[in-house]
Image (cartoon, rainbow, N blue to C red; front, side):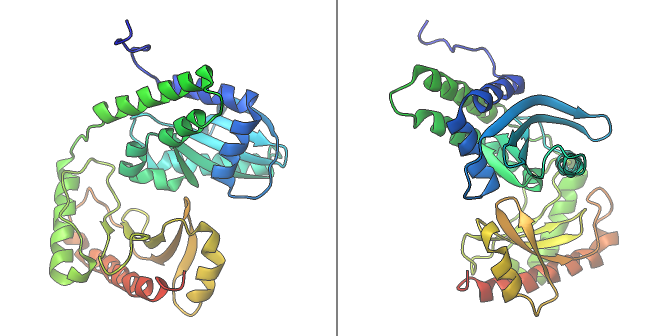
Length: 306
């Protein structure tokens, strides 16, 4: 029996209830989650956590956690279901509505999922923060005294992680894959300094071509968000340096905003439709790539400043 798994399959609801219990009964866990999401120095008590909170217009939040200081965390939990751009936006809309309705004073959205999922799902970046199953499992395992209950919860999370690893597959979309290949061919021809890698097969929701030029260090990624019409220079882990970045680029025609735990220096361009003809949008693609080159130059200037 020892070689047989203790659970046949882990569902998202299993993880929902695991987190819900811990948030409602463990002050240490609720404070740890607060520290990961809020990025503040205070230590408020948790007023409570609620499961499956639904708004008739804006949809459902898997878990809502509210702290004594009026800060709320709206959590979306995923094991392997594809993330959707509108889902993350609706979480933010529900957070804003909660402020307007007096349910909380401020909020952050958070997606909780296996690390592999967070790395592959571009729409995970829409949420204010990401928290991996691996980090949560490690929190349980870090508790002193070899608590068997904590070890079991870490075991369930690791089963979900393995389930995601085995089951994560891409359903290719030929239109989007062709669009990406033509985008890459143009970038390789006209803007080789961006060093775009040849894309593999792409699913229908793949909408963010990215660039990792070797001249920049690993903190920097340039992303062209096609449908949104944004070209971002994302600086990993720089969310607390937004004020400094705003000062450093104040004389440039760019914006600075938060992107999860990263900071994003942003240039607005015309949106693109990945399902439509690439040739009809070639000029827009060039506009986006020129913005990416400008952000590459900005990144070179900033890399020693932050």
